[in-house]
Image (cartoon, rainbow, N blue to C red; front, side, top):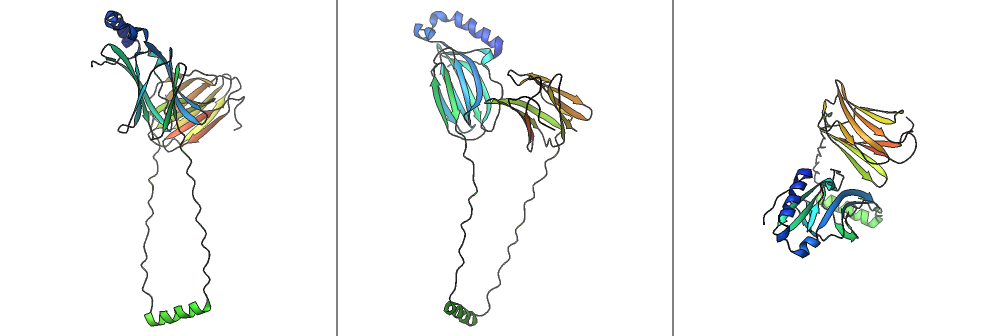
Length: 302
């Protein structure tokens, strides 16, 4: 088996030249059954995370799950990968990185989709016309079980007198050992110095933007502005960002994320689409900050 990986435009052009150069040696059934993978997308729908593969027509797939590394692999025989089908890294609590590659298996083309999982969870795969849906089950919420109440034991007078007599015969009780319990102190999370990633994720109609860092992002200021509408986040004492200075977004809520480094802070600006702004919510974690935008009109009251 000779294999090779082709990415973006250069690899796609090379693949087409190879395909045209070797067309005479490919069986007619393989050539006519050739598919095109046009889009790979991560969606949150009906309380589940999905990876949706869209092809030119109904595609054939074979799945394989590995533990080390923890990932789900889909092989699509006789399928060409379009360069703009490569997915963005939209990491969430279940789905991590998604990579796509092509290889040559004898006279056939093979497109491989690798879905890295952040946790081991069950999944189902369904095919609806030209789309393949990989759906991951939502983990159940862990509820704390309440302890069963213990009913007090009522001792009779005769039993109490018997216990006193046995205590006199056996002598004084043995000293109980006192077990000391040391509380484990958690180390405080250090303030972040660098922004390591900014990942937008679409969940139903909501847009979530994960801002990841090498420490706590608790020292921040939020300000929303109009004309044009935008949300500004200033992260104090953050010195640098290992991300692009601008990300273009497609959707009805936001159109761009801009990053600027200043002497005393790092600024992240969300350029929004609605003129009156959007309802948003900010959630802080140990090493991240999540901004959630929801459809609506107007900013929340400060």
